[in-house]
Image 1 (cartoon, rainbow, N blue to C red):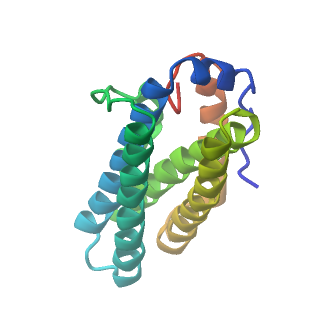
Image 2 (cartoon, helix red, strand yellow):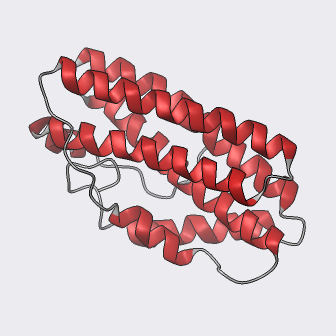
Image 3 (cartoon, rainbow, N blue to C red):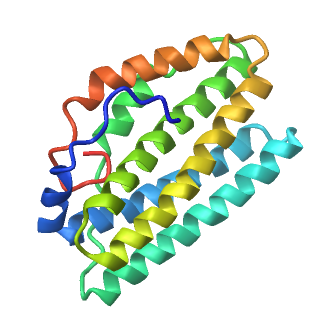
Length: 193
Protein backbone atom coordinates (compact mmCIF):
# COMPACT_ATOMS: atom_id res chain seq x y z
CA UNK A 1 0.00 0.00 0.00
CA UNK A 2 2.71 2.49 0.95
CA UNK A 3 4.82 1.89 -2.14
CA UNK A 4 8.08 1.93 -0.18
CA UNK A 5 10.78 -0.06 -1.93
CA UNK A 6 12.67 -1.21 1.17
CA UNK A 7 11.19 -2.44 4.43
CA UNK A 8 12.90 -2.09 7.78
CA UNK A 9 14.98 -5.02 8.95
CA UNK A 10 13.13 -6.41 12.01
CA UNK A 11 16.48 -6.59 13.84
CA UNK A 12 16.25 -2.78 14.14
CA UNK A 13 13.70 -3.45 16.91
CA UNK A 14 16.40 -5.29 18.90
CA UNK A 15 18.43 -2.09 18.84
CA UNK A 16 15.38 -0.03 19.81
CA UNK A 17 14.79 -2.28 22.83
CA UNK A 18 18.29 -1.49 24.13
CA UNK A 19 17.42 2.20 24.56
CA UNK A 20 13.68 2.84 24.83
CA UNK A 21 14.31 6.27 26.35
CA UNK A 22 16.09 7.43 23.18
CA UNK A 23 13.58 6.02 20.71
CA UNK A 24 10.53 7.17 22.65
CA UNK A 25 12.00 10.64 23.04
CA UNK A 26 12.77 10.77 19.33
CA UNK A 27 9.26 9.56 18.60
CA UNK A 28 7.76 12.33 20.74
CA UNK A 29 9.75 14.96 18.83
CA UNK A 30 8.66 13.40 15.50
CA UNK A 31 5.04 13.89 16.55
CA UNK A 32 5.73 17.53 17.46
CA UNK A 33 7.41 18.12 14.07
CA UNK A 34 4.48 16.50 12.25
CA UNK A 35 2.10 18.85 14.06
CA UNK A 36 4.32 21.80 13.14
CA UNK A 37 4.32 20.73 9.49
CA UNK A 38 0.52 20.58 9.43
CA UNK A 39 0.37 24.05 11.00
CA UNK A 40 2.82 25.38 8.39
CA UNK A 41 0.57 24.01 5.65
CA UNK A 42 -2.33 25.92 7.22
CA UNK A 43 -0.27 29.11 7.50
CA UNK A 44 0.74 29.15 3.84
CA UNK A 45 -2.57 27.92 2.43
CA UNK A 46 -5.22 29.52 4.62
CA UNK A 47 -7.47 30.09 1.61
CA UNK A 48 -7.96 26.34 1.08
CA UNK A 49 -10.74 25.58 3.55
CA UNK A 50 -10.72 21.79 3.20
CA UNK A 51 -6.94 21.67 3.60
CA UNK A 52 -7.12 23.95 6.66
CA UNK A 53 -9.76 21.70 8.24
CA UNK A 54 -7.82 18.48 7.61
CA UNK A 55 -4.47 19.95 8.69
CA UNK A 56 -6.06 21.33 11.86
CA UNK A 57 -7.32 17.85 12.71
CA UNK A 58 -3.93 16.30 11.91
CA UNK A 59 -2.02 18.85 13.98
CA UNK A 60 -4.29 18.19 16.97
CA UNK A 61 -3.96 14.43 16.54
CA UNK A 62 -0.17 14.66 16.25
CA UNK A 63 0.01 16.66 19.49
CA UNK A 64 -2.22 14.08 21.15
CA UNK A 65 0.28 11.44 20.01
CA UNK A 66 3.07 13.60 21.46
CA UNK A 67 1.23 13.63 24.78
CA UNK A 68 0.67 9.86 24.64
CA UNK A 69 4.38 9.21 24.07
CA UNK A 70 5.29 11.54 26.94
CA UNK A 71 2.91 9.59 29.20
CA UNK A 72 4.54 6.29 28.18
CA UNK A 73 8.00 7.74 28.85
CA UNK A 74 6.98 8.82 32.35
CA UNK A 75 5.08 5.60 33.09
CA UNK A 76 8.24 3.65 32.30
CA UNK A 77 10.27 5.88 34.63
CA UNK A 78 12.20 7.37 31.71
CA UNK A 79 13.01 10.98 30.84
CA UNK A 80 12.25 12.95 27.67
CA UNK A 81 15.63 13.56 26.04
CA UNK A 82 16.34 16.82 24.23
CA UNK A 83 15.33 17.00 20.59
CA UNK A 84 17.98 16.13 18.02
CA UNK A 85 17.96 16.64 14.29
CA UNK A 86 16.38 13.98 12.10
CA UNK A 87 18.94 13.24 9.37
CA UNK A 88 16.49 11.15 7.36
CA UNK A 89 13.88 13.93 7.24
CA UNK A 90 16.57 16.51 6.48
CA UNK A 91 17.78 14.42 3.54
CA UNK A 92 14.22 14.07 2.26
CA UNK A 93 13.82 17.84 2.54
CA UNK A 94 16.73 18.36 0.12
CA UNK A 95 14.76 16.51 -2.56
CA UNK A 96 11.83 18.91 -2.33
CA UNK A 97 11.66 21.25 -5.32
CA UNK A 98 11.94 24.81 -4.08
CA UNK A 99 11.00 26.63 -7.27
CA UNK A 100 7.87 26.73 -9.38
CA UNK A 101 4.34 27.94 -8.82
CA UNK A 102 2.52 28.21 -5.52
CA UNK A 103 0.55 25.05 -6.30
CA UNK A 104 3.75 23.21 -7.20
CA UNK A 105 5.29 24.26 -3.86
CA UNK A 106 2.19 23.06 -2.03
CA UNK A 107 2.27 19.76 -3.90
CA UNK A 108 5.95 19.25 -3.01
CA UNK A 109 5.30 19.96 0.67
CA UNK A 110 2.40 17.51 0.67
CA UNK A 111 4.46 14.79 -1.03
CA UNK A 112 7.30 15.38 1.44
CA UNK A 113 4.82 14.99 4.32
CA UNK A 114 3.32 11.86 2.73
CA UNK A 115 6.77 10.30 2.44
CA UNK A 116 7.62 10.96 6.10
CA UNK A 117 4.25 9.55 7.18
CA UNK A 118 4.67 6.48 4.96
CA UNK A 119 8.06 5.64 6.46
CA UNK A 120 6.80 6.32 9.98
CA UNK A 121 3.84 4.02 9.33
CA UNK A 122 6.20 1.30 8.11
CA UNK A 123 8.46 1.70 11.15
CA UNK A 124 5.48 1.57 13.51
CA UNK A 125 4.34 -1.63 11.79
CA UNK A 126 7.80 -3.13 12.29
CA UNK A 127 7.74 -2.13 15.97
CA UNK A 128 4.22 -3.46 16.51
CA UNK A 129 5.14 -6.85 15.06
CA UNK A 130 8.52 -7.30 16.72
CA UNK A 131 8.80 -5.45 20.02
CA UNK A 132 8.56 -7.66 23.11
CA UNK A 133 6.75 -5.04 25.23
CA UNK A 134 3.05 -5.85 24.62
CA UNK A 135 1.86 -2.38 25.62
CA UNK A 136 4.21 -0.78 23.10
CA UNK A 137 3.27 -3.34 20.44
CA UNK A 138 -0.40 -2.34 20.74
CA UNK A 139 0.48 1.37 20.91
CA UNK A 140 2.48 1.17 17.68
CA UNK A 141 -0.19 -0.91 15.95
CA UNK A 142 -2.74 1.82 16.71
CA UNK A 143 -0.38 4.58 15.58
CA UNK A 144 0.39 2.69 12.38
CA UNK A 145 -3.27 3.09 11.35
CA UNK A 146 -3.19 6.80 12.14
CA UNK A 147 0.00 7.35 10.13
CA UNK A 148 -1.49 5.49 7.16
CA UNK A 149 -4.50 7.82 7.27
CA UNK A 150 -2.22 10.87 7.33
CA UNK A 151 -0.18 9.50 4.43
CA UNK A 152 -3.29 9.04 2.29
CA UNK A 153 -4.61 12.48 3.29
CA UNK A 154 -1.41 14.19 2.15
CA UNK A 155 -1.43 12.29 -1.15
CA UNK A 156 -5.11 13.12 -1.68
CA UNK A 157 -4.44 16.83 -1.30
CA UNK A 158 -1.34 16.67 -3.51
CA UNK A 159 -3.52 15.20 -6.27
CA UNK A 160 -6.29 17.73 -5.67
CA UNK A 161 -4.14 20.86 -5.57
CA UNK A 162 -1.16 19.82 -7.69
CA UNK A 163 -3.05 20.73 -10.83
CA UNK A 164 0.11 21.72 -12.72
CA UNK A 165 2.11 18.68 -11.54
CA UNK A 166 2.09 15.07 -12.72
CA UNK A 167 1.59 13.94 -9.12
CA UNK A 168 1.79 10.20 -9.81
CA UNK A 169 5.09 10.66 -11.66
CA UNK A 170 6.48 12.94 -8.97
CA UNK A 171 5.42 10.50 -6.22
CA UNK A 172 7.34 7.73 -7.99
CA UNK A 173 10.38 10.04 -8.01
CA UNK A 174 9.96 10.58 -4.25
CA UNK A 175 9.75 6.82 -3.70
CA UNK A 176 12.89 6.25 -5.78
CA UNK A 177 14.79 8.96 -3.91
CA UNK A 178 13.68 7.62 -0.54
CA UNK A 179 14.96 4.20 -1.59
CA UNK A 180 18.43 5.65 -2.23
CA UNK A 181 18.70 7.17 1.25
CA UNK A 182 16.83 4.71 3.51
CA UNK A 183 19.51 2.06 3.01
CA UNK A 184 21.83 3.90 5.38
CA UNK A 185 19.22 4.16 8.13
CA UNK A 186 17.83 1.57 10.54
CA UNK A 187 20.97 1.41 12.66
CA UNK A 188 20.11 3.95 15.38
CA UNK A 189 17.65 4.21 18.25
CA UNK A 190 15.48 6.78 16.50
CA UNK A 191 12.24 6.37 14.56
CA UNK A 192 13.84 7.11 11.20
CA UNK A 193 17.48 6.47 12.13
